[in-house]
Amino acid sequence: MATEKELKKELNNIKKEVRELRIHNKFLLDRLDLAHEKNAELRKQIMTMSIDDVLAHQKEFIAYQEKFTKDRELVEAFDKQSQVKLNAIGINNGNTI
Image 1 (cartoon, one colour):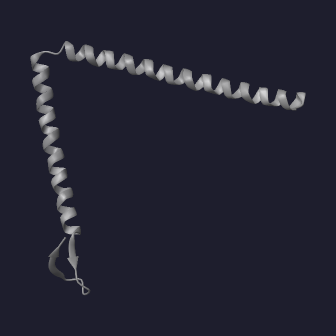
Image 2 (spheres, one colour; image 1 turned 180 degrees about the horizontal axis):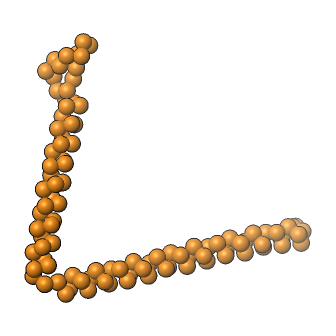
Image 3 (cartoon, helix red, strand yellow; image 1 turned 90 degrees about the vertical axis):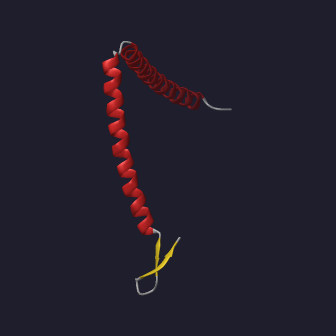
């Protein structure tokens, strides 16, 4: 059976762990509340948008997609270059993967 000192030490360790868990829980709840407030504000903005705002957002989205497509084409070109097999001399022998 454990001695009184060992039990007190274990109790203090458990109390400390509980305090840390409560603080962490409060932090997570505060963070969740902030996320809810932010989402509510975004929903309100979306629901009160005018047609002009919607069209402006669509134009921005199309511009973003075009930029993303150009970047993706560049990455694909680099990937294709890396797939070219070279012979021992380092000259392209025409085989690709």
